[in-house]
Length: 616
Image (cartoon, rainbow, N blue to C red):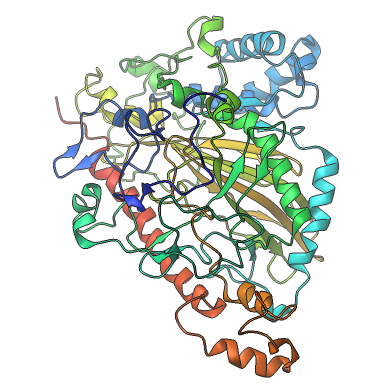
């Protein structure tokens, strides 16, 4: 074993446990493996005077893209969704058909099309020769694969979740405020780490495993966050919500990747270790997700998010006024229902029309992907487990509720979780129309400060970049279809949003089911289920009433009581372990805290990274 291998069979000090809540490992820390990976949570970026000048902070901001480049990325994403696209891009008949399709739709020029075909052909021959290679789409990087998870695993997962789904209606856990459309099977907001209530093992104690997580229930000490330990980033926020929660943290599981296959070595929060088949299937999906994460996180790990632009644009050039009179607007490439229309223009004055830039000549270095990471080398070789938060959820549609209206724009978690990337596995779609996940990137608004444009003509921002003055620096970059069997990964520097979808046949039920894996930054370990013995009262109750109790001691004989009396005994337990009803109340509070945080993040973006063009 490498000399710097740390013994992870014992508890180590991590943020909130023996270390300040906002602690990140430094080079003299035995847990140090590198700098924290950037995220979009802006936890250290905003001070009372605005953005910090710290270089690492600015890496959450991606280069501003022209509308035309975004259209090119969307077109290439759609092409790579087609079966055998690696062959089709060399078939001139098919390519001409695509050319006609683009020419009849959006503002898609000949040069844009030729560039896309050249890039796709280059990637087909040099990057994606193997049709099973995960495909990177959009800057960031968003990575998709329809073959990473074998069909055998998909079918087995569809069957295995029935043990969680087939419960009495009164026991179904419908997500709050979802109109009984989102069914939570495993959700990290239930029984999270609760500061001031959860019992956490002390540093140097033996960690909790799968076999003893219930028998050790109640071990440890109540974890408190003292007022004088409030992170500095929280203190900067004043009237807006803090990036660090002083109440809750989602609990990840520990996953050993030192061997040939992943092994979950601490319990998945809210999935009993007795569910051995589900544990095994989650491990297989983790194995499939790791190669995609290694691509998604490569630019962040390298510290280089300055992607080469396909369509450079450094100033606004305008059409001749006579030519502009015959031009039909500049919004062909954007959705009509985005709610951003500006009705304040003086209709008596003709709008100046910018000349849309063309892509530069194609060159391989423009689309050269960053070499993937190797989790095995970085972490597995040092016996350093990954920490992964697991969620299982269904969106259920019925003839009475035939349409899901979609989600909100957000990034995952608060800073306590240090989530750096997400993997979503869509393992079952039935009787629904095409559904999508959309992405939005935070961009460097200062990049247009020295832009040359006509006096007072701020509309160039919308015409060229799809953005508006006096709004936050974010760009909608596109969406990916969430097909059955698709595995999708993306970094926590991008916002994402579930798009609306509806039943295909409105006379019968339909669903979309996902397994979500949230990867904790491997360079910043957090409190996990290895540190927190089970908190679920019903897990502990079932163990104490089985086979004469956990140790044949105080609980002996409870199994002989009628169920009603047995439940009354356990309902009388106050404080700890935590009952399901109490956990659901805490979940509401956790969700409200995070809902406010998401809204405040949007306000923060506008206040400190918004477009603010002055007259010149």
